[in-house]
Structures are given as structure tokens and as C-alpha cells.
Length: 182
Image (cartoon, one colour):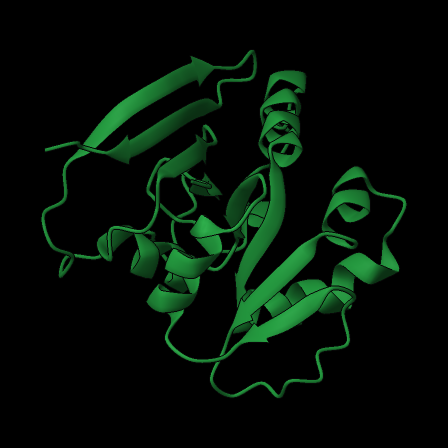
């Protein structure tokens, strides 16, 4: 069965929105290698509406970038009830029907990992629905001060298991979590 994974850049104060505002110069070779490994084991991407709209405007115009070379041709599924079915970004398909049912079915198909990219709402939904197999947080040594946080005070208590953790030369902490097996 395929795994559903998510990787999010975060600040020390748990902000995951607009990481370019707090990454500063902390992007280093080890972080790049971690991202490269994440990308290498993924052949399908899940996006929410907002991430799709933002990325569909940016990445096709930047095909020379390493991430652009990966994200542009990859198979992309978009969770949205308001976008139409005529998505312009190559290999993008809108998910019709229930997101949970779609992800359960997608996990049964042949292929490599399925990654939720950006899309905090989708990451949170799949985590609390029990459909996210791994969550990697790439925490930069910075306080964002403002912006959307990954977790909210109303979230249900949820136990996770630390799978891996690495500190990079510029102080980034890459931590991968999985659901705690009962």
C-alpha cells in the first residue's frame, strides 16, 4: 500500500504559512538533501485549492528550478469543491467526491508515495482522519510571529511517533512523525 506523506516548512512558533518570510538564509545542503529524498520517493501530489492556485501560477513559469522540474510534470490531484474540472496546470485533476474515499482508493493503486504539498487544510484533514502516514516538519531556527499555524487549540489530542530527526548545519530540525500504532 502506498504511503501518504506531508512535508511542511515551519517556524519555531509553529507557523507554516508563507515560509519564505522566515526561512532567511537557513536553507542548507542537508535540508536540500532531505527534500530531494522526499521528492524521489513521490510520484503523486495532493494539493488544496489555495496551494494549487498559487503554485499553478508560479511553478510553470519557473521550470528551470529543481522543484519546478519535479512538480510541473508530476501527477497532481486537487481537493476543491469550487474549482472547475478544466485545470490548466499540466497533469492536474480535481478530486470529485469525498476526499477520504479518494485518498483511500489512491493508496491502493500502484505507485510510489503520495505527498501533500503545502495545503495545510488538507494535511490537517488527512492527519485527523487517520489517512496521513508520515508528517515531516522542517523547522527553521526563526520565529515568524504571525501567520497560520499547523495546529490549533481546538484540535483533538493526537499521539504521534517520532520516526526520524536530524539537525542540519544551519540549525534546521527535520523531524518525521507517524501515527502512534495502537
